Length: 438
Ligand SMILES: [Zn+2]
Image 1 (cartoon, protein in one colour):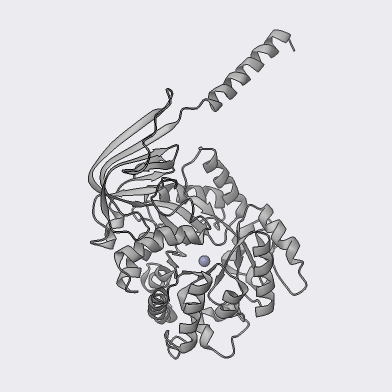
Image 2: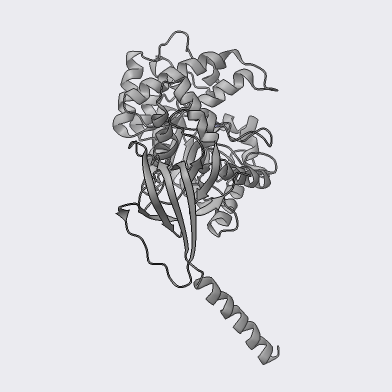
């Protein structure tokens, strides 16, 4: 190659690096709004909130007004008394288990941000797609919610049918790092190490595991620094076994019912056959379970929405058990909150069905109020502060305070007056970047 051409190429490359490193600092200033900060503090008026490169540096007298660099860009938006709350976090999504996982997940997640969802925990999907979308988000190529995603781990039968088969197309069932069979003979150290290698940071302890095996799996995941989540019961391991083993989060309030059953069957398909008609949610063993969950900081991902949706969704055959499971789950969720358990908002049916629907997280919030007796403030905390804690990000996300990531929603109506007003979105801010609803 000609030396001067090579030199020109090098100069261009250096210029590119220089422009990257000298990228302007972005400031966002929001003025004149009512703040619901996600901590449970009363709503209050705010004159000024400033974020620097996506992190809140000032809210009125808290923090300090920065002196902008010469190259900085500064965006100031007057909100004329609108309501501002933290972005919503959905703790139970499956956005990447369709045959074309990557394209679908990208579309669902980009739309979710427009609808005020700034964080999600995916509890079983194609980690290849999710890892790539997360990287693209980190590089600023896409605006997507911050994400925790999972490796799905459980007994052999769960990989033989249903949606679990779509988690790892092209691989033998149950043999992908992010969707792996676990048996008594498994090398758990290796399985968890490989799961982490897929980019997953959460171990989804799924089904058909004895209390002893579930405990060993949770211990190994925790030892290697993963979060852990399980269904309320993983058959035959019951909720209390999982809580004592150190599980981080239990999903699906109705499945807690098995705590009060003497003999739990060993087949995870029994989850649709819970004894909701004979075991009350305030059974002494359940009250003891809620107390223990609160003591050990185990979050409850109630997922009321999915049981409601299965009762009446067009195109979905009505299943008799869902109505009983929903009523029981709503009462259990209320009792758990009263016992001090941090409840989160997971839907397990996140994606909108058409171009007009919002992600169902908003409906889960409304169900917490209307079916589980939460105040709107308690429901908002479930969807913000508690969600961030469940994702292991309570220090950086979930509330609007100095030092936290500027993930927020601007609303045209008061969500404390009517929880359905979380859908009245003027715009979303994801890590300091403005995202319009359409
Ligand atoms: Zn799920």
